[in-house]
Amino acid sequence: MSNAIPQAQLTRKLVDSLYVEAMVLADEARAYFEDHGVAARDRLSPSLRVGYAVESLKVTTRLMHVIAWLLTWRGEARGEIDAAMASHPDRRLGLTGRSDESVVVQLPDGAQKLIAASEDLYKRVNRLERDLLAPPAEPPASPARSLLGKLERAF
Image 1 (cartoon, one colour):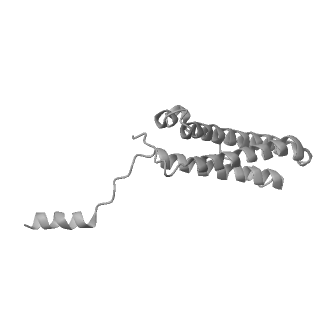
Image 2 (image 1 turned 45 degrees about the vertical axis):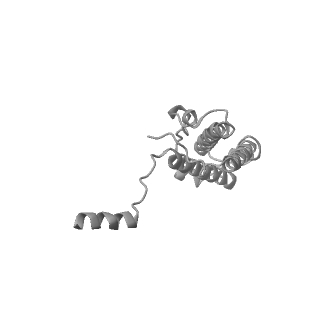
Image 3 (image 1 turned 60 degrees about the vertical axis):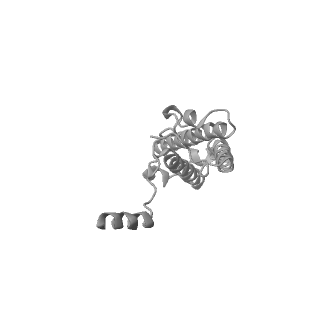
């Protein structure tokens, strides 16, 4: 697999934008799960409190994986590391557990919104990583070359 990263797709502006989004979301999650959401959490049943805690950890884990990945690519954009080092398997976006929808729908709205936002951001960064690190696709065949090939075979 080629380690060449199509820089036209992963611009410094895109990385910086996603990084700011991830940091803002991480700060919102921290504020909610540690402060604002405590009263809502305390009104939950004991089993749902466990689900709340598990989901808050999943949100934090998702965001930390995204932030670490974005920091790697910020370093690459700044010339601190090369693309081959940035795309090394050790620097790939970490795997995270999926949220349990049967638990999430029973959580307070604030928690549900943060869970959905963290999942959305993670999916977007995961898709970006897959696109960037995928082997280059074969260029489409030129229609003119195809016709030329047919002519050569015919004569």
